[in-house]
Image (tube, rainbow, N blue to C red):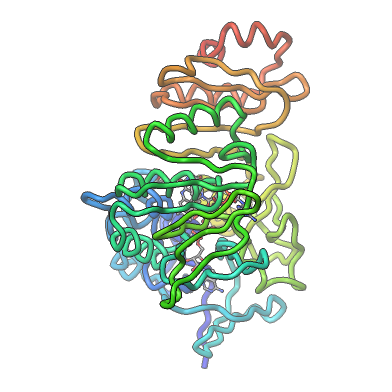
Amino acid sequence: MGRAFVYVIVGGGVAAGYAAHEFVKRGVSRGELCIISEETVAPYERPALSKGYLFPEAPARLPSFHCCVGTNEERLAPKWYKEHGIELILGTRVKSADVRRKTLLTATGETISYKYLIVATGARALKLEEFGLNGSDAANVCYLRDLADADRLVNVMKSCPGGNAVVIGGGYIGMECTASLVLNKLNVTMVFPEAHCLARLFTPKIAKYYEEFYQSKGVKFIKGTVLTSFDFNSDGKVTAVNLRNSGKLLVDMVVIGIGIRPNASLFEGQLTMEKGGIKVNGKMQSSNSSVFAVGDVAAFPVKVVGETRRLEHVDSARKTARHAVASIMEPGKTGDFDYLPFFYSRVFTLSWQFYGDNAGEVVHFGDFSGSSFGAYWIHKGHLVGSFLEGGTKEHYEAIAWATRLKPEIKDLSELERQGFDFALSL
Ligand code: FAD
Ligand code: NAD
Ligand code: ISD
C-alpha cells in the first residue's frame, strides 16, 4: 500500500509548521503536501514547553501554541491543514528512507513517495544511559523534548509539592526548567560539570549575574561535577542522586537536560553528514537534490560566520524551513540563505537575546548590579556577537543590526566606554 505526494515533510515540529505555512503562502495545491510526524498533535511552538506550559497558574495548553503564534502569525490548528488540503499523518514514525527511490516507509507499513522531501526531524534528548548510567525510566526522572515529556514533568512536579528537585545539566533545559520548578515551589539544586551555567554562551561575568539571581530564589548550585548513580526505593523511584566527589543529595524528583542528538539516522549512508546533522547548501538542499533539511537536524552554511553550523534554536528552525520551501517552489528567485544566528531565553522576570557568534574577545557593558547589561564579542577586529539582558524591542533590534553590520573595532576600551550606545550609534 502507498501514497504519492509532490512534497513530503518528515517530522512535525516547529520547522514543519513554518514550512507548511510557507507552502500555503506560496500557493501549494490541495493534495500535494503531506507531513508525517511521530507526535500525535499538529506542529507547535516547542519553546512553550519549558516556559508557559510549566506555569503553576493558567499554564499554556494546546491549541493555544500551535505554530505560527511564536512569530505573531496565524495559529495553524489541525483544521487549518484540512482546509488547505494538507495531509497530516500524525502518531506515525518513519522507520526508513530510500532517497534513490524517493520513498519513505512508515512504522504502520505504508510506503510514501515524494518528488521533494523536507527533513525536519529535529533532535532527541540525550539519555543518561548514553553516558553509562541508568535510571532514565524511573517514575520521578524527567526529560523535556516533547509534549508527552512536558505532561510527565507537570505530573511529577505536582506529586511532590515543596519537595527537593535536582536538575542535571546547566544548559538551556537546566536553566529554564529550574526557573519553572521554583515557580512550582520545589527546592532546586542544579548540578553540572562546567564552572558556570550556560557555558555554551555565557561569559563567567554574565553567568554570575544569573546564578546570583537564581540563588536569590533559593536555587543551589553544585558545579564541576557529574552524576555517578541514583539510589532507588522498592518502587523503583529515585530517592537520592550520587555525585562524583560531591556526596549524595536526597531527592523527590530529577530533571535531566544533558544535550541532544539530531535525528539524522534515517539518512546515514545516503546523505552527506556534518556536525552530526544533514549537510545542506545555502538553498537548504542536501547532497541529494530532491532532499532538503531544516531546523535542528540541518548543518547549513552560516555566511556571517563563514562556517557550516547546526543551530539548535527556534528562530533558525523557522527561517531555514521557510527558506527551503522558497528554494523548492521558486528556485530561480531564491538565493543562498543569509542568516544571523539568534538565541533567546526567558526565566523568572529575566529575558535576554543574543545575535551572531560568541567568538573572540568580550567587552561587557551596562549595569551588572541592575537589570540591563550586555556584552559584545570582537573577533579578528570586528564585532561578531552581541548579548543583551533586559532590553526593549528597539534595544534588541539595535544589537541585531550592529552585529549584522560587523563593524570594525579598533579600540576595545573605547567600545567598553560607549557600551550599548555603540549599537545605537550605527
Ligand atoms: P522539533 O521541533 O524537535 O521537531 C521534530 C519533529 O520530528 C518532532 O515532531 C518529532 O516527533 C518528529 N520526528 C523525528 N523523527 C521522526 C521520524 N522518524 N518519523 C516521524 N517524525 C519524526 N529555542 C529557542 O531559540 N528558544 C527557546 O526558548 C527554546 N526553548 C525550548 C524549549 C524546549 C523544552 C525545547 C525542547 C527546545 C527549545 N528550543 C528553544 C529549541 C527549539 O525548540 C528547537 O530548535 C526547534 O524545536 C527545532 O525545530 P525542528 O522542527 O527542527 O525540531
Ligand atoms: P545544552 O546543550 O544547552 O546543555 C547541555 C548541558 O548538559 C551542558 O551545559 C552541561 O552542563 C550538561 N552536561 C553535559 N554532559 C553532562 C554529563 N555527562 N553529566 C551532567 N551534565 C552534563 O542542552 P539542553 O539544556 O539539554 O537543551 C536541549 C536542547 O534544547 C538544546 O538544543 C537547546 O538549544 C534546546 N533548548 C533551547 C532553549 C533556548 O534556546 N532558550 C531552551 C530550552 C532548550
Ligand atoms: O518563541 C516562542 C516562545 O518562547 C514561546 O513560549 O514561541 C512560544 C510561544 O510564544 C508560546 O505561545
